[in-house]
Structure formats: structure tokens, C-alpha cells
Image 1 (cartoon, rainbow, N blue to C red):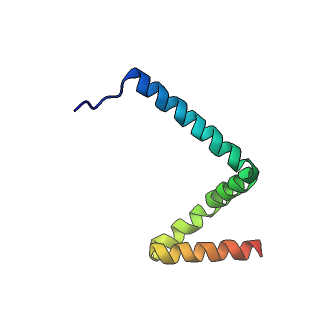
Image 2: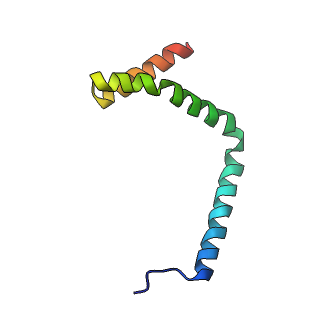
Length: 74
């Protein structure tokens, strides 16, 4: 069985991938600010999560990190 794609197949896959990314970006354009804020929040709370994780399990660390983040917003 042939395992490699032909040049035509590679080009078609590249075009379809670019179109899918552009279509996804078009539908998510209204959520861009929310996505950026979520990324910043995740970056800011990562050290707290890691500190909790050293002392407790993964699930409890995630729960406590989310609770602290909610308390910070309130």
C-alpha cells in the first residue's frame, strides 16, 4: 500500500486546511477578546496551580485554582 501523498493531494490538503482555519477564524471573530482574556488568565494562574499540585492531587489543585480565580473576579 502506498503511504505517501502525491503532490496534488498535498496541495489539496493545504488548501482545505487554510480554508478551514479561515472559516473557523471568521466564526470566532466575535469571541477573540474572550479567547485572549482566557489565555492571559490561564497564564497568570499557572504558578498557583503548580504550587497546589506539588502539595495535592491534580483534581483538587484544579478545583482550588478555579475557586481562587472566581473569588478574584468577585
